Image (cartoon, rainbow, N blue to C red; front, side, top):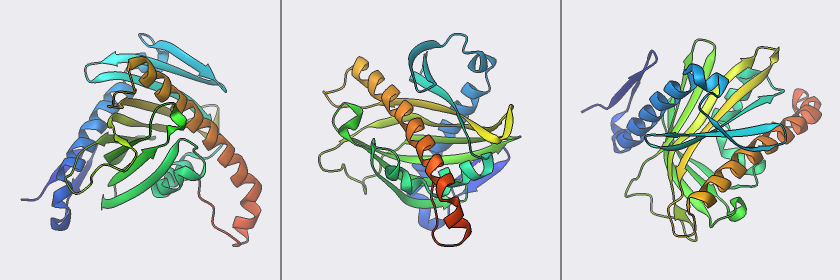
Length: 246
């Protein structure tokens, strides 16, 4: 039986060799539905009903309880064009540890369709608790002039836990990408994150602090990497080297 998932005008179809990843596709699809519902709510834009939790480097993190858990969000503007930023984020996701000190490893396990893949993401103990890793399905969709990326954990018997790491549950990760209304050369990203770290070393307070730290430092690292790319763009244009952002 062929596994499919239809959403936002796109139907993802798993090939026979990828049927073992049907849970990854399903979870990614449900995560995308949740992400779109959150981001397209008017209160998400105004932050009405959202609690301000942290602020640093011009980044403000808000949170709000949902049925599936507490969701954190952060809105950041990047001095990088939308299509290029999104392309680098999706295609070169494996390079995240180069700019994010919190990422210990990132692996793309399998590409299921042009819009869905399976990833394995590791967080180092830099986040303030023991190392964690997440096995998840990832999906992207375009709706009008906005691009969405949604990620959700799934489990597969072929992927055991990593040594010296606790397998966490990424309930909802990802974000919305759109052109900045003030400058078409810039991109606004609304990060969205909800996770259960599992393990006995992380109560609710430690989890919240770790998630907020991760989000803010991810933005800080991305901005620094963009600055480095701009410095090195001359070399890239001359074909001396290939640069990767995300």
